[in-house]
Length: 321
Ligand SMILES: [Zn+2]
Ligand SMILES: [Zn+2]
Image (cartoon, rainbow, N blue to C red; front, side):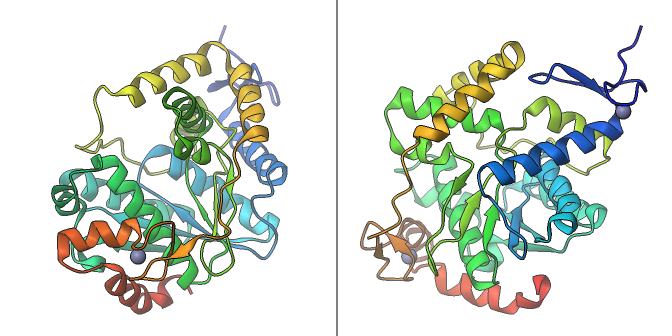
């Protein structure tokens, strides 16, 4: 006999692992709205009147986040808009950008696309080629975080939302412990608070949502997304091993994963924002003389990409106004 929805008794489409309940497609959407709403309240992610810039990569997790937030926005009185960074990585980026554009139409939220080549004068492959000390993913991470933060600051947003799920945050935490590094531990939290005029809040509304739910949600809520894979994605590194392990935990011990992460959040090192210096080139907060973004872009372009980015965002100001 097919499983029945716990709420209405219609035929179910998904089983929520940690809640141990089956839901139909309608009640899956309702459940995720409630779950994300509770995460927003529990970790003080957004308040009424806030403007949130939602990062959409084109993949299923950020597409799910955008769909859920668009439904919550009017109920909770915050405003949401989408930002997609076109990295210029061949077919992968073309498909990702197309998915983000489709998503914007489907959920009726405005979208700003920032193509790196146009906005700073170099795409990701060119940046990667000139930066040998960092892995491609590390270089990409620096650039995406910088662009998102500057876009939010200049266009009047209070927070940047990223689509990291419970599995992502648990993988960051485990990596931090295993490799004894601070950076992944700092990322393993539902909210990295901002600092007035320098950083906006970085929030993760899917912090307590697993991948089983986002996969079902994009399917049944007909949310456009792409499963295109970036050519720089590592095949076998410690990151992949850790993720495989966390995914297995999610499958076999789902409630353990949620409670483990609540413990991690409670003990997480607080992001040190106070007392940081300013980049001598672009003015962004940094602990070094020149910030990582300016160093990476200068190496590829001969000068920082920051002024060009600022100009690009100024020209696009009305897109998300
Ligand atoms: Zn139902
Ligand atoms: Zn800088």
